[in-house]
Figure 1 (cartoon, rainbow, N blue to C red):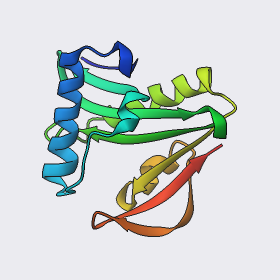
Figure 2 (figure 1 turned 90 degrees about the horizontal axis):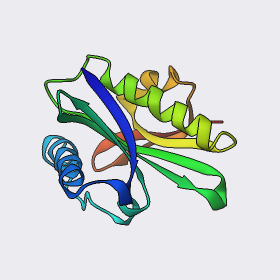
Figure 3 (figure 1 turned 120 degrees about the horizontal axis):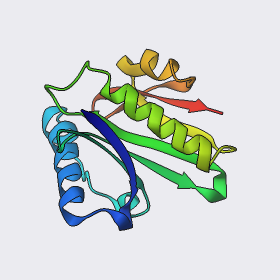
Figure 4 (figure 1 turned 30 degrees about the horizontal axis):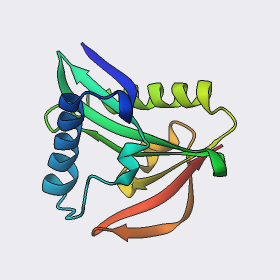
Length: 146
């Protein structure tokens, strides 16, 4: 059974943090060939979304609240190859948006989406803002939900 949880950085075990970073590197750096420093300072202030099936980390994401701007950023949403197209990303997004709705309900929510995922994020009420841009050779667009 799939289960996702949202965990502040300081509450993550070393083992779980290792597994989620390992999966992010597997997907973003190796699979998508985006050669950049995957682990960054925002990981230390983020709420980490961990999706597990039968105790194995198969999906990840992070939520970064910015109190000074009254906005929340969602990013690093990814599902392990072999587990995609089973609704796991949708379940994680439902949980993320529910969490934000309870804890940051007046905040604007933003994300940077790969262009092929526009319809996926539209289905949650996100709207495109600005123009398509390249990030690591992949087309992205900024999206927002108020």
